[in-house]
Image (cartoon, rainbow, N blue to C red; front, side):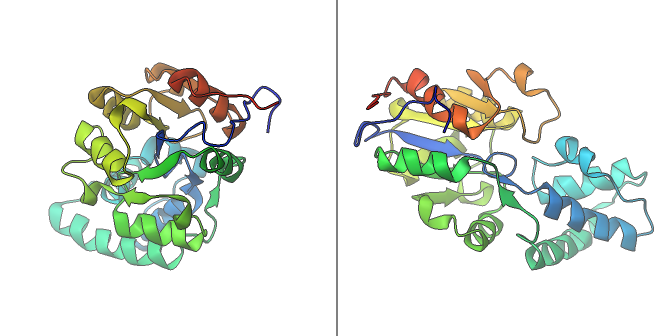
Length: 240
């Protein structure tokens, strides 16, 4: 933990709920998502894509990733192809969902700190709930969260405020004492639409540079997150 990060006193975050995006925020999933996409592209006789393309392709769900990937490789998909290859994508992805995906550096340490201080943690992701749970289970992370709310578990996906509100309610939280942690425009807009503060990480997956997303703060490492939570929610209580 960096020396500037606050150490929260036990119970100082009771009643606070932190909602986390999954891909590009909690876990670096690009290796397995891009690996799955490239397997399908190669099967279709198309050029595979470099890992650097992940930032512009990932973030709007598996079907959008597939369609964007084909477009980037020079071919569009019709509805029938999209549905068929989407099912193939899911089968391949589930078979390797955590083969190379890993939590971002410092993430588990930060979650431990928040949990010890009494905060409720919830996942609010546009990834399908079953895929989200499969990934979190494979990485032994599921138990850290009160709930995992994928796009299919909410009335509408981010950036709709109802996705965020559903996630906060599932964690028995309140909007007034909540904060969104993400990496994309959808995360920022969902929080803004709900009336909640939001921070984004610069290492995630976004077509728009993190500094231009309009978040309250842009962070570069998980060691920066506790101090940001303290500033935005006013719950910092140093025990140093």
